[in-house]
Length: 193
Image 1 (cartoon, rainbow, N blue to C red):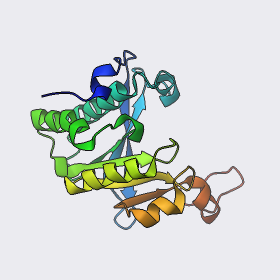
Image 2 (image 1 turned 90 degrees about the vertical axis):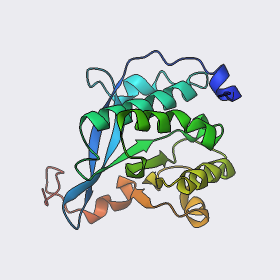
Image 3 (image 1 turned 180 degrees about the vertical axis):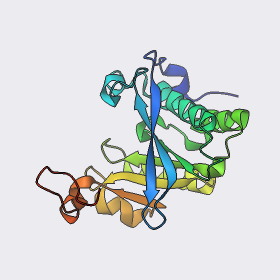
Image 4 (image 1 turned 90 degrees about the horizontal axis):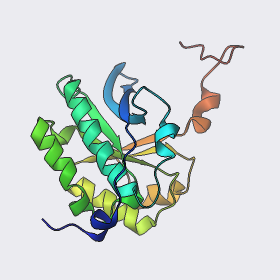
């Protein structure tokens, strides 16, 4: 199997990391329908402690390692067996060619027995990307049977233009868009807790 330039020229990402799994709850049923894999340090340090080491030279390796780690840990936790999906964040600028860059993800899922129809790929608007490149990735992932999601919609670069061109399966709104809808007490905590 030949590798693209991004695979060949990318340096390794040597910073150790793990994942935390945040439930995404269906408010109708009150049950977690998915878990979002969130990067953390090996001792649950912040995401920033890991992400601050990502740059253009190791972005591809980091993105690939995150996918492998998320699938492997989700399988160990038996997330798919519980009926839940796994939501994996991806970095659009780390995907050079969607069908080539997905190979390790598919191989990892096959090797641990994690069903690929339980995987959601999500991206945030925080990274400036070429909209046509991003749309190509999302279309390829959808054509392969994956669900897609936009995380923190309304906080970044893409906005309504992306939503008009490509309707993802899931739109996760940025907290600032809904904060005023959630009544809080004087301590700033939701009164619905």
